Image (cartoon, rainbow, N blue to C red):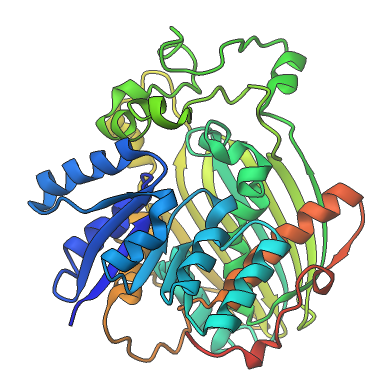
Length: 441
């Protein structure tokens, strides 16, 4: 019997779920509803569903009719892909209506909203899966296998650097993510990926967090301080589409035009705001130190304006050290063709994992080549969450609501540390159960 899914929040990210349900998992999954505040976006997806899948139309519902959709379409599981700040609303509403939920990361953006989700799960007994696609990326699963197999003994310290380039990183400052009230900032929206990886790799949850963060590159004040003039609110139609290296022209691509430019008239959302506008209030430069319950110490750095993108990670333990390098893409260069940029930003092109055992020769790990988005994790994640029967997974990749909370808790505590200038005990914000008390999803 097919499981019936509905999607609330039909941004570009929803395409992965739509295609997975209608293609790879059509034998046991049905897409029975779209729900959004903007009818144009749902109409665009339906046109794509007809063209690409020869299916549909999928019934559409306004956000105010969310429960009506759940009932009329006999939805089994709601997939939440809305703006981060309202994830909790749809999770709670779906659970109170007797449905399970799949939620895009981050689970939510602050501790009170996380507590609402925990209370709904306890009240209703429903299940929440939080989707961390990087857990499924081959390079990340191989690191998990090595740490779990004690290749470096007991982990003691983690150094984690993530660089966002001027193609990808800048996009967070054009979109709704640029406002902390919507996204919790990059410490919650983006870094939840990274904190979850560390939590998962070392099998522990954060205990104490101290963070320095600032807006040093993007935003109006920084542009003016450097003597640069960016006095247009948005890029499309500004006349600067060809000359500004940070410009995004929504009219240049069918998806951007259909999902955002043509939809503006209905909700007023501008997808291509100037990255040097005065709307930006999130950090682009972050340095964090944390201690885990297990005693592991984390040093974390995130920069959102680098000339190349990727991560450099080192995990050092009692018997050695693992060093991970995953670099995938530079920034846009004037005169560079689309093909050259795509090749430069190809997944897996510059991946390396080296192990330095204590008192033994170092060796390079043979890596599995990634296939698909997010380092090869997207397709494997979709297979895991949509397959009717999941077999045993010794790596424990399926993330529970507690895992979802643990990943955002680092960012929430970091935001509080930036605000107060003090180290923050995570239990003062949200108390998580003991790690060994958390059951598998």
